[in-house]
Length: 69
Image 1 (cartoon, rainbow, N blue to C red):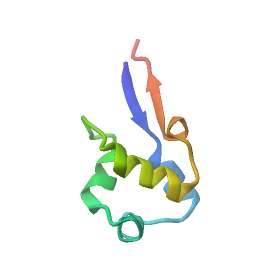
Image 2 (cartoon, helix red, strand yellow):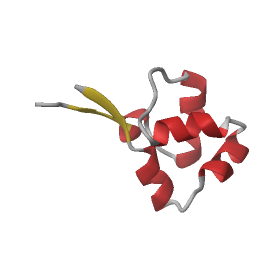
Image 3 (spheres, rainbow, N blue to C red):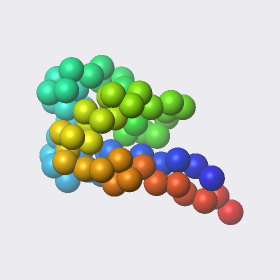
C-alpha cells in the first residue's frame, strides 16, 4: 500500500503555484513540492494543517491509501 497526496490536483484546480502557496503560508517550497510529487516520508502536522486550511480541505481530501496489487 502507498499513501498518496493529491495536493497537485487541488493546486491545479485552484490555479496555485508552489511558490505562491509557499509564500502565502510561510512554508518552504521544497515541502510543498515533496507533497505534490509524493516524495515524502513524513508530514509535519502544522504545515499540513496550514495547507488544508488555505485550500479549505480536510486531510482526507488530500491523502489517500492506494493498494498495490
